[in-house]
Image (tube, rainbow, N blue to C red; front, side):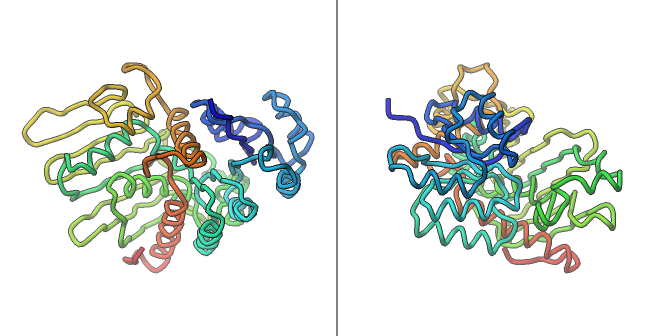
Length: 377
């Protein structure tokens, strides 16, 4: 077997959900070895966390700049090859930029940056470095999402005519109602989260899903956002009308104040010959609808699925696969790209997906501030 890819991680320490998700995902296809990083801003906690994970501490660094400085001194065959950026939004840009300039491959959490201009800078830097860059729109890794994409591309449901993507959560609701408590949440802080909370955090997932599955780019949007309180600067809820073209339209609904909701990402796509329904909380079931037949239920692991779906399926039919598997499939796609192997363009979201996400966020905020007007994307 080829030598494992040396992986470094920035952030994701302690009890971070995103941290364990990425660590498990990186191990899933036996492609990576975590060899170093900066998990926490406090060095003692950083060392302690590495020891807890069983990672040697000689490549656990006191800060990001030291990480880059020391790793770039190492011989090419020893240095960390790819770095996962799992920090709060405002650190994505400076870290990713320096990593690209020092020829590290990058796996970056979304949103890509806090501004569109920053996203363009990363895109330009990447063109010069020719390194691999992935943005973790996690849900594109589900086998049945990939199956849906393949079936849409092959014309199974005909020409797309309606797209409806909903992403509802309720976690911020109890926090938001307390004036003092909501000041403590970094996702509600423009200095750390950027210009958007809800759209930037989960609305961008829904937007990415709409473009990923249909293979089309949204041309114009109209957004109506809600902050709930005048002293809260960032949106916590939004409804966005989207147009792919004159006659292909849809809606993106995202909310973090949908009381009682957990992680309700749901996709409905309708074409001239049929439609698809899929829900993230029941990810192993894809419903195929037509006018002339009963609803078909497709599940992962069966021979009727396509190659990309099956390549991302690790268990026999009837054994549930979930969010860890989805992220693991993205890591697997990145590994193929780093190794120079053939891979499907749908196996991991790239820098263009990240830039598109930032365009979407900025235009949603602009549309809302201008009185809910249509804007070109």
